[in-house]
Image (cartoon, rainbow, N blue to C red; front, side, top):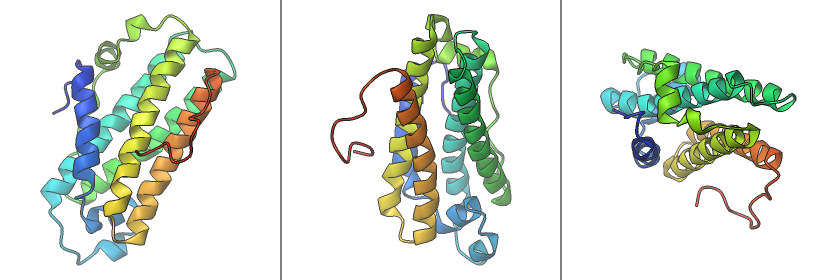
Length: 195
């Protein structure tokens, strides 16, 4: 269980997703990709798959609420506020896909915590300006990018790798836009993500 009051616990959950994500069954990944017909008849360790998907779902809940905290803080100016709301929508789509897959596997999706719990875990009280909000979001997006990229090499099925790559692409786009909004340079070298 992720202790949302501990930044170390959140980092460990991300690392766990990276490590355990490589063992997500082909059946679960096909369900996540909306390929239900292909998933039928495949053997899977559904309890393990549900656990892995719930870690990912917990992180999507965290991202959704981080953007909610930023949007509701009054610290974001247009058009940055509009972009934050758009990115939150992307994470809601990720969440919905994970919830549907967990349910198809017969599991129970991990519950979303209260906004106050996320505020405490993410130290929202320390957010004093737009830059602070963007910095928090960029750190979360970079962690998500690296988590999704790390599972791709272990996937033998191209469709499964494609799903993980599409999720990583969303997270990378978010990170890039946020980094630019902060006025920071992008990583100077090639192959800087997923390392």
